[in-house]
Length: 255
Image 1 (cartoon, rainbow, N blue to C red):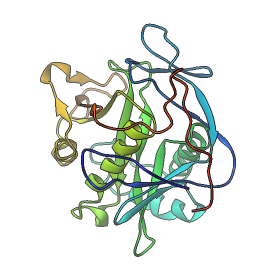
Image 2 (image 1 turned 90 degrees about the vertical axis):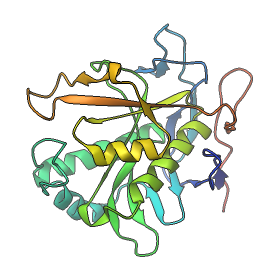
Image 3 (image 1 turned 30 degrees about the horizontal axis):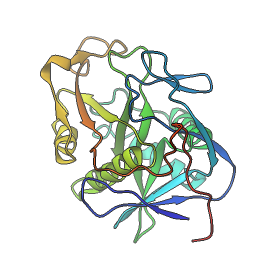
Image 4 (image 1 turned 90 degrees about the horizontal axis):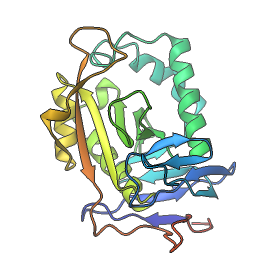
């Protein structure tokens, strides 16, 4: 079925609930802040239950030029190639081996299967070309901030076409509209001006007081990070919200 998600007054991305294995996805209450993943769902910093479960397929997001979908075996070769590109990895750390790249794909798809959202493979609609990923992930407990994080990584030939901005807006629309998130964050290295430009373009803002050193990164140019935030627009409609706080996507049907 197709759902329409309102996103900052722009044309809403189409969200397709893909058929296939039933997966558990997580819903969120707009009042929950400081979200942390825990067994059986999510909890806010104050311990409130923010993890109602619903059954459904992995969501696929569709924009004017892109499709954000689950991962396929055919994605492995171009994914491995882009992660062996020094320019793509400039602000990410060492190049990945083919085996390491394969492990990342398995992790990404596992999250999509388990939670119904995560980091989707990005495909150009017209050509079918795989160009990287965009999506949402839960911040690890070892980081100095909490919540759900927006992220993307594109192959070098896909740079400069506005794909990152387009895909990021679709992911934001899904996070705020379908999941009802109160806020979405994004993080990058202080020197990654290209990614910061995308964050500002999609309406995110930063406070220098929240800049931090990543505890998992050794001293050097990649250690200093900047944190961007975007709160949910009060006018954004939430799909499937129930008075009890538990909500689910509408039952899937043929589109």
